[in-house]
Length: 172
Image (cartoon, rainbow, N blue to C red; front, side, top):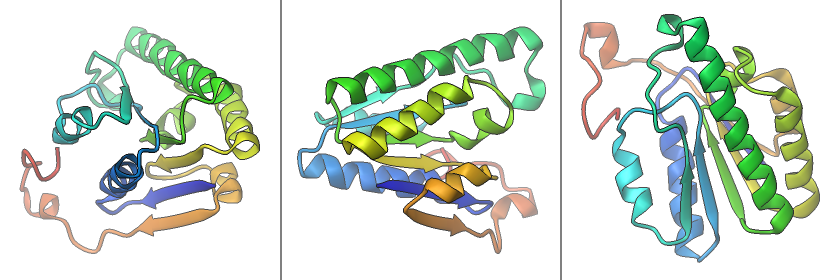
């Protein structure tokens, strides 16, 4: 089945990690793929300790999209396409039971990977069975149409609105 965690509220990545941990606890093979993130985040340390979880992500932090150069965008697109290729290979080989695609909505909306590769991956997952979990704001209509589970996180209040910066261990 396909899960979609979207909306402007906090908790999309956290929810997907909870599901990945649950699956790994039942000895399901999980691939946790992060898009747009290359920075140091606390969840990685916990996931790296789980033998049934493999992490795919950029080794380089490109920062926010708005501060990227055209060269950065080309480089990140290549990295994202490599991640998609790796996910496709894993599904074709039957090497995973769950895929988490964290922050996947951004490269869709900003055209930072080959959309046809993503659509192929979706078709493969539906046909061959790995659970697919996707997160990110502003999910494209085709994701809404394909998802079996949709959870929309709504921000009602956030400390950032009061000038509180992201805190280590809480937001990253």
